[in-house]
Amino acid sequence: MDIDKNKIQELLDESSAKVEAIMKDTAALENILQSAEKKLAEIPNVGQYAANLPLMLSMVRSYIAKEYTEVSPKVVVSMVGALVYMLKGKDLIPDKIPVIGAVDDLAVLGLALQLNTPELEAYKKWREEKENGQAE
Image (tube, rainbow, N blue to C red; front, side, top):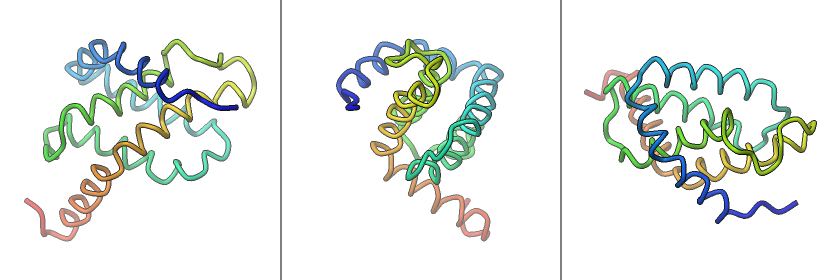
């Protein structure tokens, strides 16, 4: 089954205003991050994307807490948009359909991760330097 990347991008673009409002509400954003973690735990074998999902959640938390600001707000919006899609969006494939229902959610998350890999790697380096006392 092929997922249309343009359709996914359109859905993310449509939700960007909503996502920007959510990002201003720390409690609502934390609720989304916690819900995403729970939902991700239910999805079997997320494969190559699994390794960077916790990093993505951590980066969003660090950005919102103003600990890590070396990233464009647009990057954070795209990541939160993917999480909102996964949790509340108008699905291309309804989540009610076992296993297949998660395909579009994974595609959206995968695209967000793929598009933002350089930013995630920069955040990972910053976090490692911080843990080693090398970052501000």
